[in-house]
Length: 567
Image 1: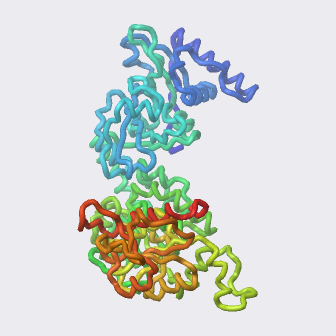
Image 2 (image 1 turned 120 degrees about the vertical axis):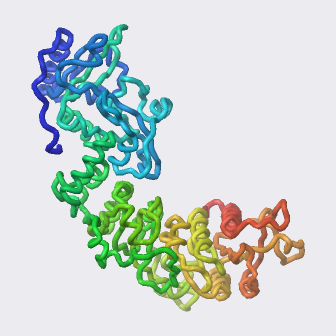
Image 3 (image 1 turned 180 degrees about the vertical axis):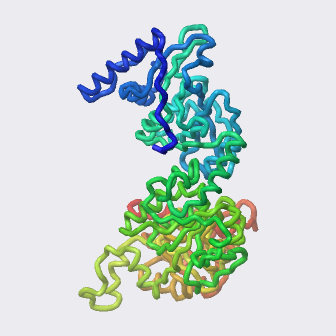
């Protein structure tokens, strides 16, 4: 536990009811020591607690770190026992900032004038928090949003709720209302040290943000304290120099290397060179490094086999990437990727791009070497297959194993970076095995293309080359049916002409579909290399779908017409 959590002062002598409950807890502790279990029962007034809450409460009572007491009427709102009367507020924030944890329980003193903007900043969040509604509270925690909502509810299985603890409670005993007693406004209180409570919650996997400033004055004081102590150089720095709140909790126990960038001198470090002046940069495909941005794209990059050199991340977003970083390190048997932590203001000075949601998280990776030929690209689709050439009588026999496998190929011509990113997302969605790009297509690994593709350019294989030659090779050498997207007006009903997608018969297990700059293929050589043409029927003639939408419709329709065993 943090050193600020001092042990509680000795509690005063409890009244008759509390004395009986403390005795019950002591007896339960003795039974637990003998039998290895928790106390067998709790007061009947606590039946409204969930099983998870009762388990935490029993553990606190059994280890002698807490006591239950009944306070009647107005006494339940105050007391002279030195414990701070507290309440829990159920809050929600932006899903993209909080990740899968979209709700927060804020534990603060009853008398504290909580400012939710200060709480959000203290937790390292960019967006503000707001009160959650009663229905969401019931759904997430199985509890009502009332005066008896306590931090024990954060242990509800599957809730993923974070617990934020006010900095005003550090090192102090607290009194929590657990259940109403009688009809005169009395309450059953749990009195315990804040340290013991948080220990039990953390032991059950609850994400705790400790020492969160809840007022503007407390936030200013915390910032001044951090500035006076100096920014941490690594997660292993002493607790007094760590950032407070959610960032410190996210870094706790992380085995990878993190560097904080906090000053003008840090901005001159060569380690940042790949991230400098990104605004308006057009990549040509010859650069040694590529830049990915946004949580979705970077998680996809970390899950790939690309070589990733470093990340530049706003501190509050580190938690959303930590699991992906650790899983990549474990899978590859190497140290986690270097993470550079930098607040938004300094990040914008480095990149020249506003550090909003996507651009507040950047990754530098090495551009991969593309396959030199169609044969190599197809071979890489199944690295576990038999090695070609063993016992082969001819070149065609050498690749016979490739012709036995299902194959979906998307060939695109003349698309810019943004459109390339869109069709890669379509390709991933509909199970395309390989994307063929014409020489005049945009760079699929440009920052813009990777962002539009939501990182799927890092998982769908690609090959760049002359489409007429590649399509002809797919058809004649690798037994794939090749189709070209056509305009609806080209469908005449003549034999061998274009047909509508909804009139197309069953598809073979292996096929390739070609699309042009606006969807339909206009290049005569590409059309000639395809065995047939297919169009999408439209109710409004001349309606422009856009290349991304047209590719989705065609890929879905072709995949649905494959043999059932091929899907």
